[in-house]
Amino acid sequence: MKVKKIGIVSLSSGLLGENNVKHELNIGIDRIRDYGIEIEFLPHSLKGIEYLKNHPESRASDLIQAFQDDSIDMILCAIGGDDTYRLLPYLFENDELKRVVNQKLFLGFSDTTMNHFMLNKLGIKTFYGQSFLSDVCEISTEMLPYTKKYFEELIYTGRIKEIKPSNFWYDERSDFSVNRIGVSMKSHSNDGFELINGKSIFEGEILGGCLEVIYYFFDNFRYEDTTILCNKYGIFPTIKDWENKILLSETSEEKPDPAFFRRIIRALDDFGIFEVISGLLVGKPQDEIYYNEYKATLLQEISNKDLPIVYNVNIGHATPRCIIPFGINAKVNTEQQVISFNY
Image (cartoon, rainbow, N blue to C red):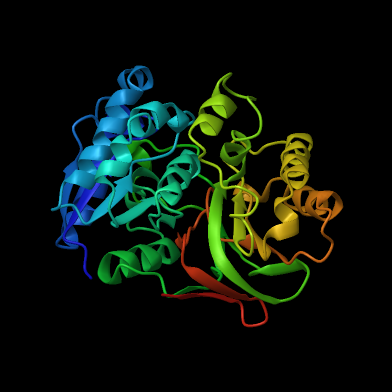
């Protein structure tokens, strides 16, 4: 199935609508059109940071419209943010999303983790790992090759068959201005999937995302009503629903310090998730900050000492990024350095 039309939604930050990213926006539009794909920006997706911050109902409306529009094959999130959970009442209070939801390609990461859990609750299989502004609009002369490979596989086939490690990782940009267009990021050799605990081969359906967003389900560390809203609508799966799944975990660009990382892992351990899942996949930390500290914390804090833990997956906030399907049975084989998906 080749994607014919992509709908862009801003479900978190409204950054895509700001003047200072117009050059990135135009690069992304041209790249999508070069694939022969039509691109549509949902009505509120370009309204800017301030408007969308104050109007979560408008963000929710765009998602509903994207699912209602039969001409849209793929819903692509503009970028992340930090308050997608505020869409919950507008999507779930009267089953607004449930009434219109259907199986389409849905791709996003970071704060979009919350949307993945929303759609998982409604039985929709989604794809995690890339966004429009962060990846398609990359200001190098082209999308990063590893990132591009998986994006093209998804838009050409509607699936991801398998993922392997990237040969390189990159220093994150601090300057996205016009004068940096065509300037490449510094690259480093990458070591591949690292098995730090447990057996080298395991399988299960993958679910998860950005670790700090997952922590919204357990603690109001950023906003005072995250746990209340998430619990009200039952967005986080029960411990029984987690049985034999694989948890995907990756940290954000905020680079949580080791103490905060430990706090999150302890909360998940107390919930019991590490006792029932079949394995844990951990994304490379951005710029490899706290790389060894996070690894040590996982080994120290996870009570299940037999749990397979695979570290250094090229997913989430460290570039380049693959795409991981949620809700599809995956087989992880670190001996062969591959994660394959059985549709």
